[in-house]
Image 1 (tube, rainbow, N blue to C red):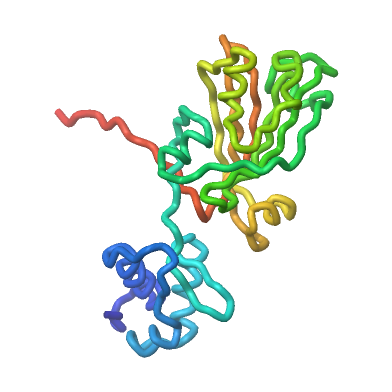
Image 2: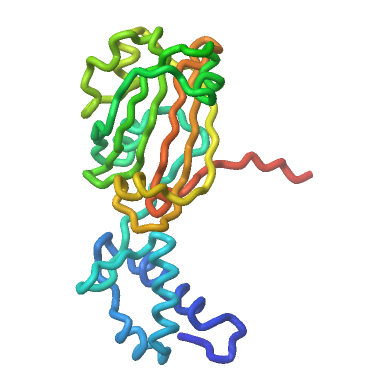
Length: 244
């Protein structure tokens, strides 16, 4: 119950109780939550306090609202390992989700300055740019913008990428198998275009991923992706030193 004498704000206490309700009760995704009125009566709280707690859980991606219907349990966030070793397609399949891709645009253009530097290309070198909306079980998850030197895969844009892994295609068609890579992750606010594609309200937080993949020490791919922060959480493991 809520402890009125505690220095912890009441909405923070309620948030913890609601997290327990979601986690310990094993609430299924899309299960309805008690209404704000019910929570007010159950815990003896004001409507403002209850709304503050629920708003926080919505912003964290634990709950979601449907106007006119109520508040529901959101699907668990997908762990994004900081050491990625496979494609989006493989990651989704490993979690029992059906991966998908919607082609937004594809073109062959001279590399911009930062793309040319990332790929180690000379001025004016051409790159294929592939923009796709990545989905899991039909839900938009990420906007992906991939840059590949045109010299490595001359006719790449003649292939339809929807429904297949780009990495698989590169390996089968061109013998390109990436053997290493690096990646950075930073927080940002979705651009109006990405928010619309990801079906997010504005403003919404997102994760920006910038990945470079290497073929025998040569950078052969630069991918810049916008991931929904309400559906992903970063995950890593720690190697702790042994205590003497």
